[in-house]
Length: 84
Length: 181
Image (tube, rainbow over the protein chains, first blue to last red):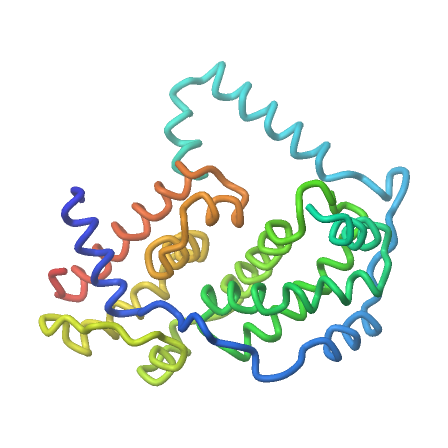
């Protein structure tokens, strides 16, 4: 698909699904519903120790793993980019 | 950032309910509007706005006041909307009425019939949610790519790639239906 086709598809998509009206507002006040939701499912307290396993640690390990994979197997870079 | 604003953000970070209410009233409209752009379904957008603010309050301890509230809230809202797209069979809910319900009027191209528009919308609904959300925000809603990238937590290059893949898959789907876009 070349740049011209891409522009054409964008225009077709905009014709099929026009943008949402900018002035659309919610039909009701949502604050009472948020309060009910917080009462029903209270916000989880901050965890500590193993139970407070921080996902940032996992993200870091995953990033290191991906960099390692890319460094040792450069052929995998296009595949990694494709699945971004 | 003004001192008052900064104070509210710091209080919210410590779990202060009044600060959370202030932030809710300041940002609910923007959060709802952003989610509506993704879902195109007012009822779902309201439910997801509630879900988003619940997630926001649940995560108050991880909030970094120095980075501002709006972008953080938008990112959580985007994730909630993406979860919704993943669980919904949007294609089954599409109808001409729904497509027009929240859409702004546009100048229709005479060469594009109503049937082609509906088939394009249905083909678009069949795309993988992560491609659909990128194309919805960047192409249909014409949001700046850096804003879309920030909301999805990926790079601008990745947004461009996702949009390209979405349009390519859309074109392929339409061609399989005998429509030459």
